[in-house]
Length: 332
Image (cartoon, rainbow, N blue to C red; front, side, top):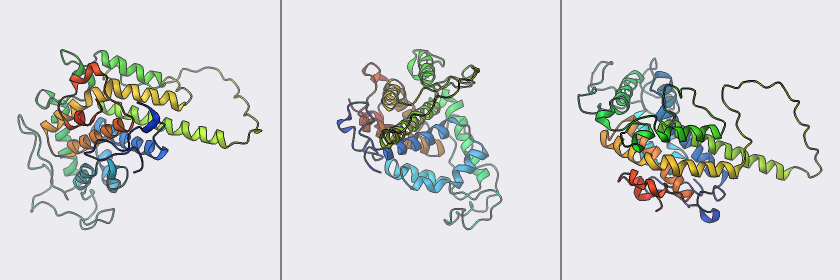
């Protein structure tokens, strides 16, 4: 990738340059779009419970993991996840996969169905073999999801920010309300807020992706305004209509500077504070598999984006960072 998108271990690309800490002005539009793609992928993969539709779509589009921006930010993790998703879609004969790559062999004469490694008491599930069926993959990923995110007393990898930032490690803490306020400030509302905390790590990645997408739209709008003839008539104002009660608050007009500030504040106040510890615990609980692969991509994405924007977590919360590689790569 171009400027601002760094590598898996290096922790960042060209940095923020002259844009100042937290400024997106030093990032090219291409780089902002690349981070938007990465954050959107991480958000969906980490938040959405595994089902046949999700994994079927990932299997069908897995070749994207070998391309930009994944190839620059997290090449090893993306390659490993690609290989895990290299399965034979249900109903399709073996041999050649839908993307033209050779299909994997089925496990030695083992019939389909349950994987050989289930969720053992006190331990993570065994990763399914490559080249199996989509049904095999789905069962394996469901076992991972159950162990990591439901059996948090064993995995210690809760996906909710407030668990990492409250003394009693409970959900719906003060950080949940802060995250909810950040969503509302951008005209967004989590529809399940009454039943589920707003500060799930996947939702937070989706929010970052939304801010990045709006930053691109604002930049494109600015470019169009600059290229428009000076004597071009301004569009007539829209005819007022009767107010309605929207399902979610109306989003404010895009402004790149305001969106960039919101992005920097959210990263420094939330994701950069607890995500390093979450990823550290997740990978300690289970080193290989679908969610560890997604976690490594998310870890590299967050590290690269923070370095590109010259961001660090708020100083008072650095003790929540754990000891993993993401903490080591963040600016002090």
